[in-house]
Image (tube, rainbow, N blue to C red; front, side, top):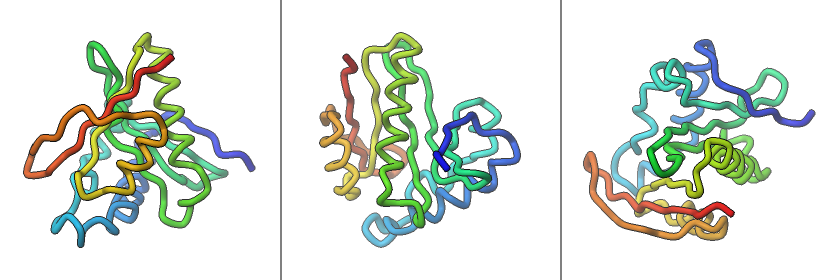
Length: 150
């Protein structure tokens, strides 16, 4: 069965929250606290229409959270369930976010990650993102990255 990306519905919020907690738990020791996505209000994000879920049958494999800025699309969060990692779903979700940015008329997409999530920084770099700045926000040391879309 081929996974399908669809808008999240209210009934998905608890599963998305649980998936985020499971996917980001591995970073707690490196960061010294729970990453921001572990405490996100996913019911609110779903209600805003910001969440898309990747489903295979009735199982949610991953999700993205997108917000539109005036000059770019912000990929606020991308997560894949731990038991679905390593199958290319993260890349597929990032590509879906890029397609959404293009569909909305944007020529760039932005994201941020924690400075200690070095594997994520390396992945985003391989996917064509470049670092634009480092800041401390809400107590987190973040690396902002951007990709120009052709």
